[in-house]
Length: 148
Image (tube, rainbow, N blue to C red; front, side, top):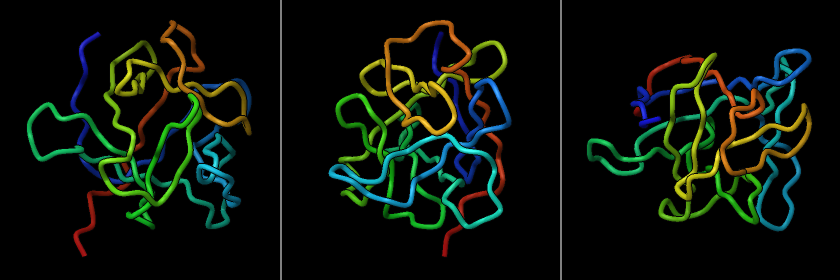
């Protein structure tokens, strides 16, 4: 499928996995490559579950970077096919495109791998794309980009 454009802004990213609703969540404890990124239930505590999605470059058709909405200097990186959130220079952030699939979107890395949620609480990984619901996501737009 061809990539689809995504409106830059702040999103909650919902995973399509069995069980209660799950959101992409930055964990609280960093390890070697940063804080692992998992899916977890919507939590009323201030756990990081809102993401800023914006083009990596200011040109049409650019892939996107995904950063924490509350800590814009911190974004998604991929190490050993696993997803982490870390404070790195912008060129080191992972880039993604989005493809429309039945029931949502597929999030594809710059290497053509699909973001996958195995189960709630598991670290997200990137895998060769397959037509599986664990690779389907819903982007819930919550607000435009805040230019402070």
